[in-house]
Image (tube, rainbow, N blue to C red; front, side, top):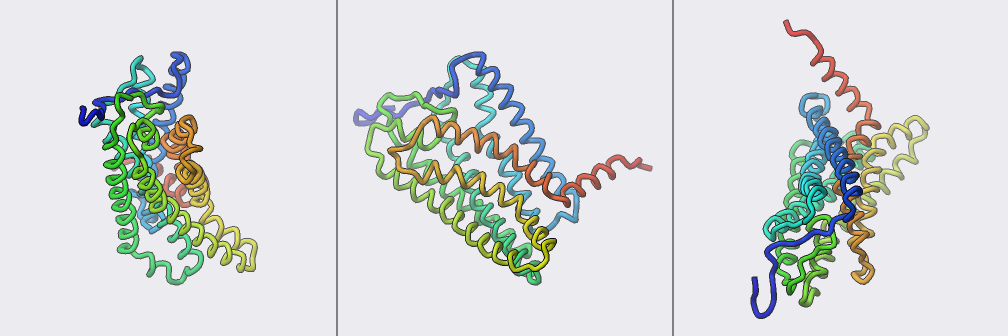
Length: 313
C-alpha cells in the first residue's frame, strides 16, 4: 500500500529468537511444553473454582479471571511462535499482526488492572476483616473486573490504531518474535512523537497507576500485620497475601523497567526477553504459585478428585 511516497506493508517478517535450526527445534519443545503446562494449570484453576462452591469467594473470583486472562494471553502469541519455529520464512500478514497486537495489549493491560483489584481485595481482607463480606460483595467484584477488562480493551484499541497507522517505507523485518508495539514503532519512517506519547500515557494508565494502587494497598497491609501481636497471627495474615504479592512483583517489575524507560535505551533483544517472560513464563508459573501456597486450592482439588472417584450407583 502506497500513499504520498509512504508505504504500508501487507505483511511482516519476524526474525524470531534464533536462525539456527537445532536451537529452533529445542525452543519448539520448550515453548510447547510451557504452553501445555499453562493451559493445564490455569484450566485446572478455572475448573476447581467453578466446581467447588467453597471457592465462590471474591479472592477466587479474581483468581479465576486471572487464570482465564493467562490462557487467552499466552494463546494470542505462543501458537504462532511454535509454528514459526518450524518454518524457514516467518511471515505474518498486516491484519493478523494488528489482531495479535490488539489482543496482547488488551489482555496484558487488563491483567495489570486486575492485579490492582486483587490487591484491594487483600487490603480489605486484612485491614477491615469485619466488613469484608459487605465491602467485597458480588456487585463490587463484578464491577472491578468489568472496569479492568473495559479499560484494557479501550487502551489497546487506541494504542493499536496509532501503531498500525505508521508507514514503514518498505521496511518489513521485525526484530521480534511477535507483533509488539516497540518493534513496530522502530520500523516507522515518519515522526513517532505521537506514538511515544501514547505509549507513555498507556503505561501510566494500565501500569503506573495500578502499581501505585498495589503499593499503597500493601503499605497499609504491612502496617496492619505488624500491629498483630501474635507471630502466628502475623504469619496467617501474610500468608493470605504472599501468592498475590509474588505474582505482582513478577508482573509489574519487568514491565516497569521495559515501558517506563527512555526510548533511547530501549533494546530489541530485551523486548524479546520480556515477551518470553510474559507470554510463557508468568502464565505458566501463576498456577503453581497460587496452588502450592494455597491450602484451600489443595483442599478443593482433593474434594473434586474424591467426588470423581466415587462409584456412581
